Amino acid sequence: MEKLVVVGTGHAASALLSSLARHHYQGRVTLVGDETHPPYNRPPLSKKFLSEEINPAELYFRRPEQLAASGIDLHLGDGAAKLDTDRRTITLASGSSVEYSVLVLATGALPRKLPIGVDESGGGVHVLRNIDDALRLKADLRAARSIVVIGAGYVGLEVAASCALLGKEVTVVEAATRVLARVAGSELAGIIQHVHESHGVSFLLETTVTRVSKAAGKFNLELSGGDRLTADIVLCAIGAVPNIDLAEAAGLAIDRGIVTDTHCLTADDRIYAIGDCATFPRDGTFVRLESVQNASDQAETVARRICGLDAEYDPLPWFWSDQYDLRLQSVGLATGAEGSIIRSRENSHSIWHHRDGRIIALDTINASRDHMLARKVLARGELPLNLLQQVEFDLSRIWAA
Ligand code: FAD
Image (cartoon, rainbow, N blue to C red; front, side, top):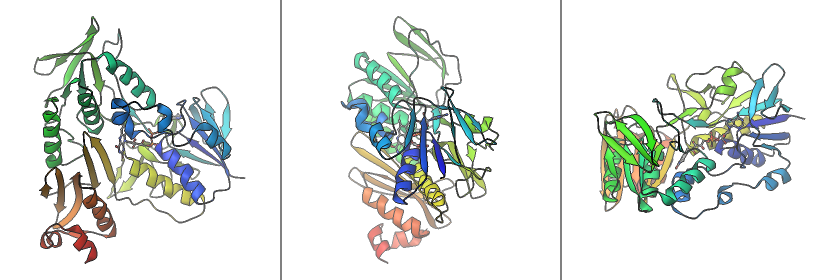
């Protein structure tokens, strides 16, 4: 019987289990995770998990006993330490080993570290990737009055929003000229920064932190330009790096992530890689996405292939973020856009990015209907800009056309 081993217990692994069940997979499944928790929902960690009373177990997709009852061999809190591709074995941190005939690497990503020395004495700078990080941050927030968030990407801004809602004094320090510089267009970034400011959040843009130290329970931050900040808590949210150590040590190809083909297969035809740890070919380069969409859709591709069905990964990327009472959603990749058209109604905004006369991406704030329609229309093919202009942005008419 086929022995499938999945390393990692995040979104990609969880989606893989669901897809395998949907396709009636008959082999044995072993799930290996270095966290003690079963697969859980990660996005709430920076959102309502911080500002509301939520028990970690409420985030679990399935409890350990439910996984065991469906025949899954579970190794939680015992990460994969070594991969031997010749003998097709994984050695776990505890020293025990598991054999595979098919292996799926779903090891996710790790928080990027500040590229400066940080004095960790008396409690360190926070990062936020998993439940344990979130519990530590939440515990420290109870007594804190102020927080500095380093990094104005989605995670940094979501934590800033959660902390502002808790009544904390929040300062966001960002090296780039604007917020969400790597992940969203400047129009959406401008609107969201304004909303944060209206909730009392301060921004220091084009500013880097050059030194962090701690004295008498307070953090002291030295900034480029010579200014200083003090705060009770510091969160470093400057992005994530793919968790590739296991694959790299085993000799698998790495190019900003574990290299895969359009089937999510690595150069070893027994090993797939999916989710935040993997890169895949697109437009002549390798792309790595960090989103639930990417983890789930790659998992479906791999489950289909393991079950002998046809599948190729050619995604239409989409993403969401919740901040205050706003739902931000993006579909498509705005990279290389030549311009954008904004349509706003009260506190809802749709920002259409175009290139060569075609719509390539849509950013929305509180406009879920436009987002869902754009997902259908863009998945169907390209959307000509002139058609959009003719129908005065009423996407349902384009869909009907
Ligand atoms: P992960 O979910 O990170 O899971 C990887 C797992 O593998 C981890 O449990 C890790 O500990 C484990 N692991 C690593 N190495 C080993 C090893 N050697 N042995 C065993 N286990 C190992 N995306 C969205 O689309 N929308 C959002 O709103 C959103 N919000 C987010 C908020 C936060 C705070 C974070 C951190 C991420 C957010 N994301 C969001 C991104 C999304 O959560 C990730 O893209 C998604 O979790 C990727 O799934 P994954 O399975 O690849 O990785």
